[in-house]
Amino acid sequence: MNFTRSTKQFMLLFILACIIVVTDCAGIGINKPAAVPQTNPVNLEDYLTSQDLTNDISLIPPPPSAGSVAFALDEEISQKNLALRGTPRWTLATEDANLEFPQAAGIFSCALNAPITEQDTPHLYNLLRRTCIDAGNSTSMAKKYYSRPRPFMVNREPTCTPNAENVLIKNGSYPSGHSAVGWAWALILSEIDPEHTDAIIARGKAFGQSRMICNVHWQSDVIGGSFMGAITVARLHANAIFRSDVEAAKAELAAVRAKGLKPVRDCAAETAAMAN
Image (cartoon, rainbow, N blue to C red; front, top):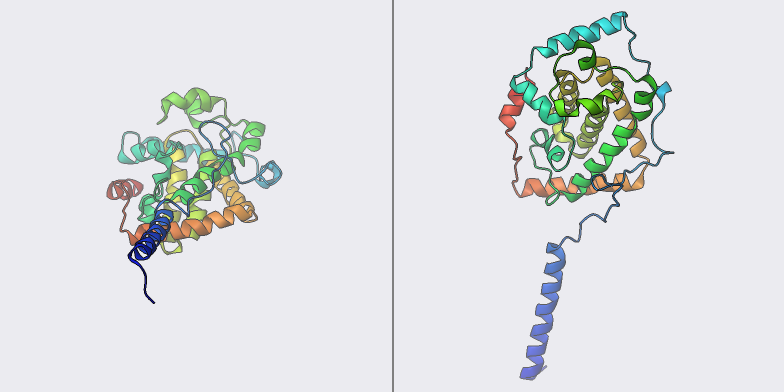
């Protein structure tokens, strides 16, 4: 079949246009997550509704009462953690206290041996933001009901976040919201990246311990918070959007690894600090 010169030029331009469209779609984020509504200028909408949310004080025992053996153990562990003030472990605990994004997205990056950023892993990034709200909210009812004084209110020793103390005084110590978030993230990330489960769980445990080292939570607070975080993850698995985001996060993490991207944190220093 013979084509005129103008016909050949038209076909060439048509093919080139098709290539540009396909390439453009692949590069501009065909897999970008759908826009998530924000509940305020900082937080994204969570996955769980108030009806779905685990927030029942009957799910955990009451905090140890003053004078009990259990509270004596809380006090003993608290005193031991005070000795870490000014050490690299204290510095890490201070960093762990910050749940604002984008900083918080990197908390588990060393355990994953991969970065978590809004640019490279948008589904995973948003997943962490949304589950942070879900897990944190799971502790709110018990916090308000028990209104347990925090360690620094009892021992009068400094915390690693002095600027937050005025807020913390008004927010009950039991159970720990940070610990609920950290343990929820550890379980979710272990599902996304089972190859690094041991490192992820160890980081989740250390994240909870950071709250004791910061002198803002008792050990029983951390245990109770971790339990509420685990229940939250169980509830999240009934949410189809959450499950879809988990699968998308798996693909993103694989792509990051294929690119050879590494965490921007000082992972050697973090590992050494966690050893204390």
